[in-house]
Image (cartoon, rainbow, N blue to C red; front, side):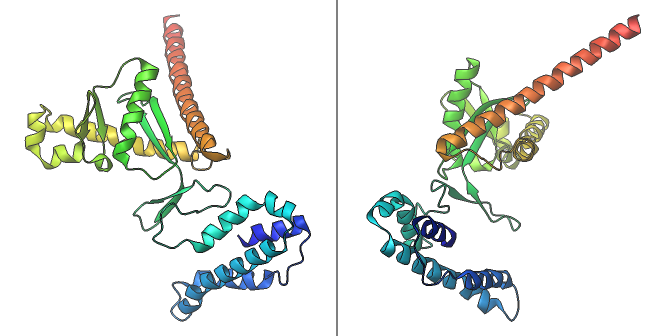
Length: 274
């Protein structure tokens, strides 16, 4: 917000009373002392100081802007005011001035406690791993609510609906989605009577568990190899387009790999026959 108000002031030719360049640099440096035994108090005070500076610059720019300038930068200034006014427990908070639709996702991990962005749900086949459904959700929705649009998209693309989907504990709450059965593998392993009722053996349940776990490294490859973790397209439409392009590129690589594997086997067979 501080950089945004400075840029607006430069574009409109507004002379600020103070730029706070050195003060901001000093306060940002203090943010790293949250775990320091003697300087933790300074680290806790630094965000409050930065917020005060941001509000001061925002009010200065808003006061000195002309009517035409206020019309040009009205949207950005309103976002800045909303960020200054929002509290920790508020809903629909703004986490990015450039992408206000970005949502906060709690990971529950010590290494990465929160992630900011859009939620993407994937649906893959059991054996080949082809992505048959990919949906982008701009808000932080419950995982169980992402399954229905995925199955509808898969049915539109393949012409048939999956009979069974294997999910993790994030989809707790429902056992059926239309005509598709939802199987949570931890439930099968923790309650053998349910597995027996569904006619699933212990060995088969373990096999299903391993196949469901295979999607985790697949998601990691989509993030690192196909840039799912960093989207350069703007807006909600850009997030959806990026997710579709990532899924298409991943499927295309699988097709190319299988094609080369088949050609290699064919060439080897002809070579030995000759």
